[in-house]
Amino acid sequence: IENSKSPKNDFSWVFTARATCLDSALIVRSSQLIQHRCVHSRVMGASPGNTGAAPPRLPFSRVTQEDLAFFRALLPGRTITDPDLLKSSNVDWLKTVEGNSEVLLRPKTTEEVSQILRHCNERNLAVCPQGGNTGLVGGSVPVFDEIILSTSLMSQVITFDNISGILTCQAGCVLENLSNYLEERGFIMPLDLGAKGSCHIGGNVSTNAGGLRLLRYGSLRGTVLGLEVVLADGRILNCLATLRKDNTGYDLKQLFIGSEGTLGVITAVSILCPHKPKAVNVAFLGCSSFQQLLETFQRCRGMLGEILSAFEFLDASCMSLLEKHLKLTNPITESPFYIVIETAGSNATHDEEKLHKFLEEVMTSSLVTDGTVATEATKIKALWSLRERVTEALTHEGYTYKYDISLPVEKIYDLVQDMRGHLGDMAKNVVGYGHVGDGNLHLNITSPSKDPALLAAIEPYVYEWTSEWKGSISAEHGLGLKKRNYIYYSKPSEAVALMGSIKAMLDPKGILNPYKTLPDNIH
Image (cartoon, rainbow, N blue to C red; front, side, top):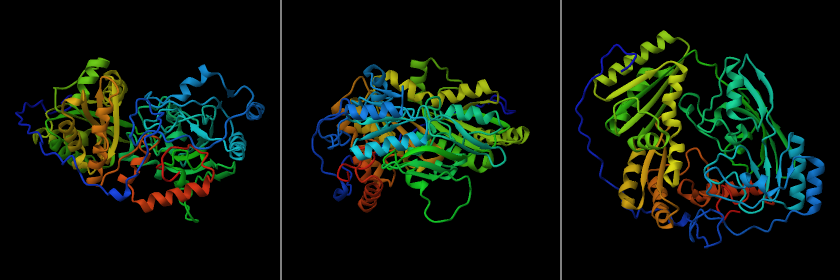
C-alpha cells in the first residue's frame, strides 16, 4: 500500500457468489397496501398501474391575471412566466418527472414567502417549494400546474458564531458555498453530498439528506438546532434557536426536517458545524468479497475509532462505468469491491500511525487485496471522485431506475445479487454502491431506454425484499412523488394515518407540495 511501510502483498482468492435468492413472491402486509387506479401520469414513461404515477389533479384554483398582478407587485422582476425560463424548473434533475407550472416566484425574504403563501392559501393555489432541484424522487418539481416557489435568491448567511460553531443562514444557500464560507473560518459543514455544488441547505433539511459524513457527524436531525418555517396560511414559525439543549415542550423543528415541503416552507436554518480537521487521509482499498468488506469495516471501526469519518463502497460494475464513461483511472488492482475510507483528526502523526496499523492489519489478514492512500488535497479529491461520480457515470448508460435502501449492514449487497438473479437479461446493469457505515445501499438498474416491463419486474419486488428484512425503502432521498404510495412497506398504517392528521392540521387545504410524500389515500 502506498505511503505504508508494508510492501504490497499478493494473495490468492476464492470468491464464492452467494446464490441464494428470496422467493420473488415475498409475502407483505396486504392490508397496508394501497388500491390505486390507473391514471394519467406526469412521471415520464410511467406505465398504467405504476404506484409511482401521479394521481388526478386535485381541485386547486388556476392562476389568474389578478394573481399575477399580486405576485408582480410583491416580487417586481422576480415573478417568472416565460415558458423558456420555466422549463428547467419544471423538470427534475433525472429528467423523469415533468410538470406544467406557468409561474415561478423568487422571493428574497421570509416576509415575502409569508405573503405568497397567505395569498395562495386564500385562493386555494397549490405551491411547489423548490431549492436546488437535485432530488431523485420527483419531490422538487410540480406534478401539474403548481406555482413554483424557489429559494434561490434566499442565499444570505445571517450569523456565524466562531466559538460555538453555530451557523444561521437562509434556506437558499448552496451547500458548497456554505462549506467554503466555513472553511475560511476553520469549520466545516456536517453534511457533504455529491450534489453540493447546486443543492440548497433548505432542501437538504427538508429531505433530511444523509451524505458522506453521516457516519462521523450524524444526521441533520441532530445537527440542525433551529428552523424558521412559513406555514401554509402564511404564519411565520420562528424556532431559529441556537441552543444545543432546549427541553421546553415539543421539538417542532423535527416535524419539518424530512417533510419534503409538505408541512411548511423552510426559510432559514441554524446548524451546528464541527471544526475543520487538521489532518485528512483517504484510503482506497480493494476486497475480493462483500463479507471481507464487512470484516474490514468491523476492524476499521475498532482500530480507527474517533478519527473515522467515512466508509463507502462501490462494486466492480460501478468501477467499469467510471472507466468507460468518465475515463477515470482505477488506482489499484481490479477487485470485485472497492472501499473509500476517510479519516479526519487534529494530529497528522497520530492519525497516520493509526491508519498505518489498520492497513497493515487488514493486508496481513488477507481482508484487503490492494490499496492506495492519499493525504494531499488533489489526490484526496481524485479518490473521492471514484465514489461521488458513480451517479454521473450511470447517466451515460441510458435510463436508470434508482433505489435508495436502508438495510442491516450484512444484508445490503444481498439485494444487489438477488436483483440480478431476479431480473436476468432484462436489465443492462445492476450495480450497488453506498454508505456501509449506516447501512445505506444505492441500487441502480439500467436499461437502454425506459422499459415498463423492467419496471414492473423491479417494483414492488425491491420493496417487498426490503420490507422482509425490516429495512427502509428510502434511506436518505425521501419519498417525493415516486415512492409516496410505497410508504406502507416501511411504516405501519397507524403511523401513516397520524402523518395525514398532522398534514391536515398544518395545511388543511393541502396546497403545500401536493401529490408528494404521503400516499394517495391520505391526501
